[in-house]
Image (cartoon, rainbow, N blue to C red; front, side, top):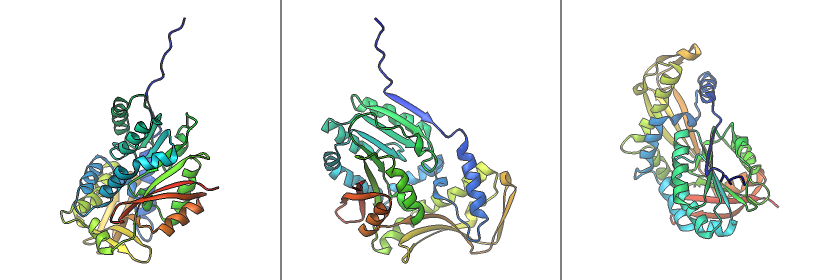
Length: 332
């Protein structure tokens, strides 16, 4: 009789294969040659950028992480009870610090079968996967290392009859401009099947002073985080930016209801990006946009979901109404 070989409890697939460097080069060539220069915020997050963002999350002015964690602590059991989910897929999983609250609720409900973390950092996916299978009996982890703007099709189909929750936490959905955001939500809708749920974190519209303080902390950590993208360009693309020659700018655009982060040239500058053979000039006071972070009302959330073939099944907020977790299902 052949021995029964149990399937591995941890599987990790990487789909980057050096493509992340090409994406950076393409984004820089496109963004720095526009009349209004800009870069996408995903390039903040090298090892140093990730460390700085962890520090930002602990700052007194930066409420989103604390609020989202408080919501998950209060409402994870309700979310699991409403959905009956057997599988959790998470985009931008990181260390799965907040996600553990959902996994614990699923485990206690007796429905937890598989976790699918999706992140750009392979070492983080592997480390959290092995921690979680030790923490939760019977859990299987299928990790995906990739860029969620390019590799969503690598997410495996569900392996159990029950529904899945696809989690996109942290308010990252706000980094997309409105049209791009709706296209991205439609791509997430296709991963849900007919009975799955999307759980998406959104920062809410509030007093501009509270919003601007969250991106202009007194210790200057956010400013250092913002300038770090220039260190990334210097290292990865042989650029010669002088990061201290740029000042951090963050403000709330009241018409668009989003925060913009920019880097403003303190003096006229000529920058060479060696890997691209590109020379870029900055006038004194000229700005490079590095992030938008949209803030949401319930109506905006419902409109984006409706345009993407989904509807709001439940919304959970912190006691002060600063942040929301939105649980969406497929319409009809």
